[in-house]
Image 1 (tube, rainbow, N blue to C red):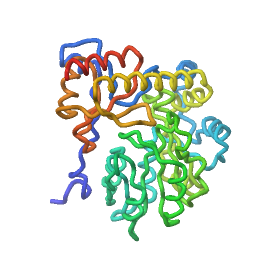
Image 2: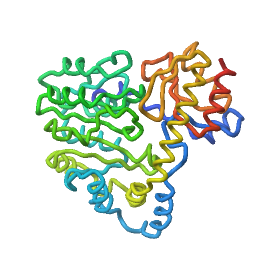
Image 3: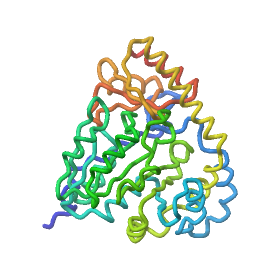
Image 4: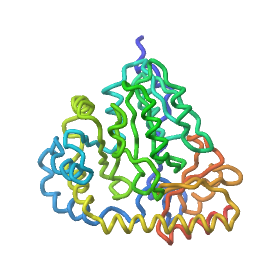
Amino acid sequence: MRKLVRKGVEDLVPYPPGKPIEELERELGISGSIKLASNENPLGPSPLAVQTVINKSSTLNRYPDGSGYYLKSKLSKKFNIPFDQIILGNGSNELIELIIRTFLSPGDHTIQPFPTFLVYEKIVKGAGGNMTSVPLSNLSIDLKGILNAITPKTKVIFICNPNNPTGAAISKDDMLQFLREIPGDIIVVLDEAYIEFTTDEKTANGIDLLDAHSFLLVLRTFSKLYGLAGLRIGYGFAPQMVVDYMNRIRQPFNANTLAQAAATAALDDSSFVHKTLQVVREGLHYLCYNLDEMGLQYVPTQTNFFLIKTPGGGKRIYELMLKQGVIVRSMDSYDLPDYIRISIGLPEENERFIETLKRVL
């Protein structure tokens, strides 16, 4: 009998999603839980986006705009990027998959740092490609190690900057030097899902680096800063030729109507953006101060989340806190078993996290 699935698929482990809060509360017999596990915006979605979704709901009998005209036009103007160098996706996850489906053949080689966003390796191996994972150096991406891992079969390199789950960011100078040393026929995917949260002015910005490498592809998302994770809308910047090839593979209506409309409106919601950044930065300051008081180690971050080293292992702390109605992320799947990862929440959520962590420790 012929084998049912593609070679390598049986070896993949499904991405570990969190359960809905309502289901967890039902199982554990608790209520009033808070979720600090998925790097979401604690303020909710952009109010301008919400109103636009309401106004646009009467058009749901029509297919979405397959060209993404209005959203791409707004992005083009905001970032001064030509219209034909922008591509939209059902979240940046879909764009990662489009890159692999467009450019990777079975047996081709890819490189990533590790630990990093788990989806890169999953998509590569699902498509029959090979992945080399270069260990982090002091929890920072080892660019020299990635360069040394390049082979004649290397097709794609993934860099998440700032990196998930560590929150560490690569400087512009280091990234520029790295891109100059990459062979010109390798696609470099610079995933900047958290770039808007950075406070270090030296952090690399992909938009400023598009001319530094022939096939640099910069990915961004509306899930984090703008609070539109549930609508699934992301975007990418790349050379026109790269975008053209990806559009040949892309489903014609991959970005839905409400997502496009909400994202277009959210780009104008400057007050919401300002408030989000303020909440995240003030929350991070509060959490770090209290963790210092508790004598716990944590990893400095340029994002809206960070790692905390916990006595007795991250999974144990995750399970104990879950029973108290505080949902965090254990890092076993990232090969960081001593850590938990938490997102910055609202002030009252941050206070509850600290109180609960003290109690379970």
